[in-house]
Amino acid sequence: MDKKTKTIALCGKGGVGKTSVSALMVKNLAQRKNLKILAIDADPAVGLCTSLGIPIKKTVDDIRNDLIHSIQKGESQDKTATLKMLDYELFDALTEFNNVALLAIGRPESEGCFCKVNSLLKEIIQDLAKNFDVVLIDGEAGVEQINRRVMKTVDHLIMISDTSAKGINVARTIKHLAEDNKAVNYKSMGMILNRVRDEREAQNIINNVPINVLGWLMEDDLIREFDYHGRSFIDFPDDTSACKTVNQIIQDLQIV
Ligand SMILES: Nc1ncnc2c1ncn2[C@@H]1O[C@H](COP(=O)(O)OP(=O)(O)OP(=O)(O)O)[C@@H](O)[C@H]1O
Ligand SMILES: [Mg+2]
Image (tube, rainbow, N blue to C red; front, side, top):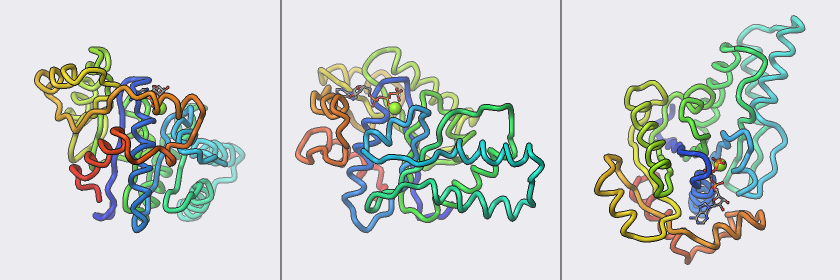
């Protein structure tokens, strides 16, 4: 991967706020007009697309299925021609909004194992990523799918958790999987606590959980409201504690 592209992947238990935090991060990054950002929605439910108010035309899974069907019909081409076609298709699947491009991965693999197709697509996504300054991946609950379907290596692996023991346990599991190098390669790892109601809860977790806490976001009615109304997080007000926290985290990580 090009050295100048920074990759961030967010993962964590279902419903803890991965998509909300991803969308706030994209909003923050998008304000830096000199940056080109690729946001990858790796959730089959395409939550990030909704949270950013950016519609999608086609997912990587659609491209994958088209290729599988053409292989099954015996229309296989050599690798160079296939790569060229996939390159075009992937570019076509991008939805651009100012300096942000959005790519949706779609459903998990269906129709049996076509490992070759998956690895071709991963190759192309990795190539595509080189054209951007920052790539942000909003993952599913499991971290394995990032490695399997999106990218082998990320710079910053960020676990999102609420303050519940269940959320923290999932973060611990992801940490172990990543450390054993079974899930995804990463350069730095940290956790963002979300929906914190009482600062003491956050401090208690910081003191007792062996994962670097990058920051925490409070329980926030405006986040809930934006989701309730399906409003784009690009319009989330800057002078809120959520935006300020996200800004601080991005600065601390030296993403930009
Ligand atoms: N800090 C917060 N304060 C209040 N509500 C929040 C906060 N963060 C997230 N939520 C709410 O929690 C719900 C789940 O958030 P979100 O969709 O971001 O989680 P997720 O981890 O992406 O979920 P999934 O695993 O389903 O993809 C949403 O309704 C959202 O509005
Ligand atoms: Mg989500």
